[in-house]
Image (cartoon, rainbow, N blue to C red; front, side, top):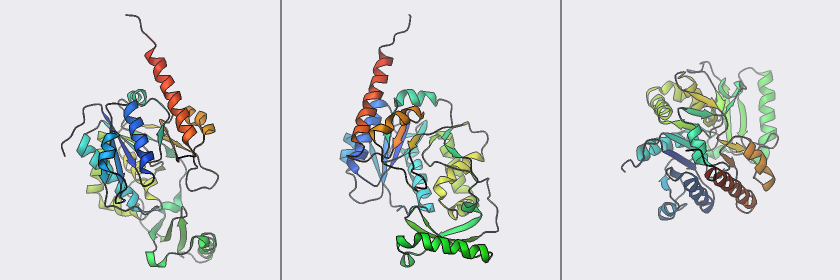
Length: 316
């Protein structure tokens, strides 16, 4: 496929697996707010999205053959694949990585201009999370998966044993979805470990650094592939190892988590003021029916912003 991007154009990558109609609604809205932008919908489910329907919404489709197992390196592999494909198809100035359950809460054209000269918009977590990288984590084989109701007792038992027997394995149900087992590792991180949100904005230069590191540093890939939830660390850690990149901190998308919840909650109308005040351009997660009032109010607020700017004139 030939590149169709122009200098300054943004690409929006939607990592999707649920509700194709909702994803198409987001794609249409992105194109309304940034007519020159490109939208790439990445999914791995046969029949999830008709490319003709996506084209009608102003989007292209990446049918990936990389199945995602939450909490493992597969998510990073899928993200890298999507970033590389967006670069190949569009050659964008920046790529915005989003969930398929995101929706804009700001005028995207204005937001894009605010990122001129920025290589990465990252939302870091300052905590160390040493348990994620001081131990080597691996998914239990599929045939040995344990029922979800055993998550608490098994995890508690493994921690108790580890406190008594140095080097004992640790078993954990990551996010209520994937059983992982770990053991202490001897090797140090090949680049300093950094954690933060997966949902980011990356310049063409930052994407190139990320892809080149992946291709040329198998030691970095091996290490992070054996960390806990590597999708929350790989991009942040690799880019932090390149101090010449201009990185700014802030949210690309706002997600609201209940206490100790591994996944964000659904958005409701009353969450809009917080989303708009956060500085993020998007909010998640949007769920059909539950979040319809949120989406309608967000669209109305953004349209009012745009109309206000259009009605403001400057002296000749």
